[in-house]
Amino acid sequence: MDGIKKILLTGARGMLAQDVLAQRPPHVTVIETDVQELDITDAGAVRAFCAEHAPDAILNCAAYTAVDKAESERTLAFAVNETGPRNLAAAAAVRGIPFVHLSTDFVFQGDGSRLLREDDPPAPRGVYAESKRAGECAIEKAGGAWLIVRTSWLYAAHHANFVATILRLAAGRDRLTVVDDQRGSPTYAPDLAGALWRLLACGARGYVHFCNRGVCSWFEFARDIVRLGQEYGLLPATRVIDVAPCTTEEFPRPAPRPSFSAMDTARYTALTGATPRLWQDALAECIARLAVQRV
Image 1 (cartoon, rainbow, N blue to C red):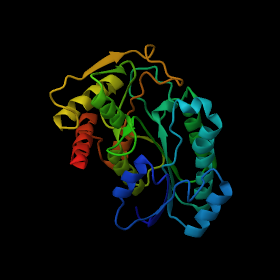
Image 2 (cartoon, rainbow, N blue to C red):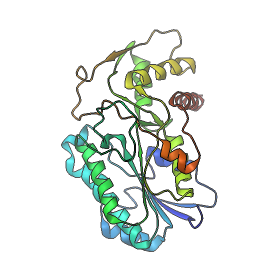
Image 3 (tube, one colour):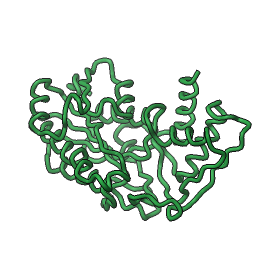
Image 4 (cartoon, helix red, strand yellow):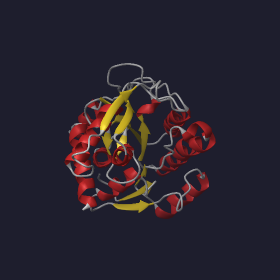
């Protein structure tokens, strides 16, 4: 990470950014911004902010992530996920500094059965997916030194996410029904945060996929969350909590989802020398951390 002493971080109060900040190298200063400090959809504001603070790199963790709500909020989704990244990438290109952006497995149609590589053709479905792919294209057109890291099924021991939702529902119900025909790779935010710092350090460019290793369905993920929640005392150990599978058709949502969107992380390993850990191990650490926080 030679030459990078000051990083502009957007979306600083979001889930991923909190873990990015927790793992900040001691020699790096992070300029923390969220929408209150910097409106990334305002090109003039972005240029002025960069001119004033002179960062050595920009890491964009700001995103519109309400997948279903995006179907009725297209303008807002595209403003945050396309216009914002375009403005940040353009500012970085003008200043000759690296720009790092987070994208998603949703840019793929996800109707196959093999791990998705960086060079597989995107085919987004739904407004959220389309807005994220539009952001990728805008960054490419801006030029400069850019890195787009695609990830999937992100969760953490803080903020609202799938793990927190399942634990909350299981605390009040004896039966949960969860989709079993959508498969992907859960990603623990601290692991992704560490990956971002490694990629910055090695000067990675282009597209890189990062997620925890292994593939599961949302049902299998939820079943392990409940099991570990009981083991670690977050849920009553003696109560029977039934986690049952269902199909996507039986649980319709406004936005379409990929049926298989697990990604190949070989390029990440080749660049950094690090191998993502299994999703089961990452989930166990998350649940253990939640148990400690509750004490």
